Amino acid sequence: MRLIKETKRWLWVLAAAAWLASCEAAPAQVVTFESETPGQPPRDFEFGLAGEGGPGRWEIIADPTAGGGKALAQLSTSMADFRFLVAMYKPVTAANVEVTTRCKPMSGQSDQACGVIVRATDASNYYIARANALEGNVRFYRVRDGQREQLASADAIKIEREQWHTLTLHARDDRFTVFFNEKPLHVTKDSTPQPRPADGRVGFWVKSDSVTYFDRLEIRKF
Image (tube, rainbow, N blue to C red; front, side):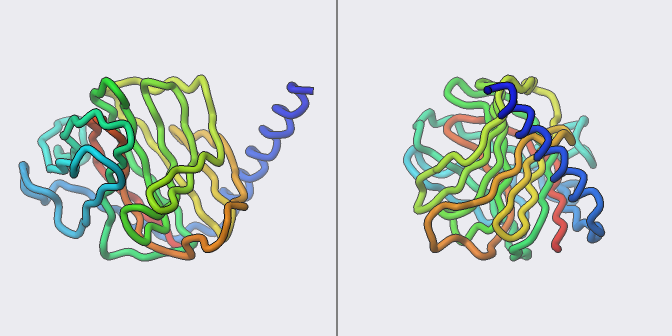
């Protein structure tokens, strides 16, 4: 029975991925950091916190392996478990959207996470796809008033520390698809209680003491 359910799940994921690939792709807006000043937060981003442990430390750093030689890093290391940090891109508000980042988990005793968010109305309300190098999983959550509700998970995923990975969250109406390193992992229909975020900002996410680098944010509206 378990094998049948797993087979059905993968058939659904592959079918959804094929449908997404067949959709007419909108031109991507690509946000990079090569023109930003090292040691400073990037222009056009708003930073926020849900939980404890204090605000994040988001700075531009030099990284020769990053696109343009620079990356956005979250460098603070508070180990508060209930600590969700976001960097929201102010110029874009969207409902149906696909966001992709290239991210590199560097360190963290409590967490080594990198994430992307969509439909963020503020620092406490959004949808998130995140990869965790310590746990070896990629999960999809809805965050409501700062509280996470897990909606999907893919386990036993190899997520190497100090290596670049791509993470994509595709949001169309009430259906969300997550890709990791260009591989589709799960498709979720949101049935959580209303009201749900209808649209909002996109951006980056980390948890607890995750030191994580991001070198781009690709945004496609539908």
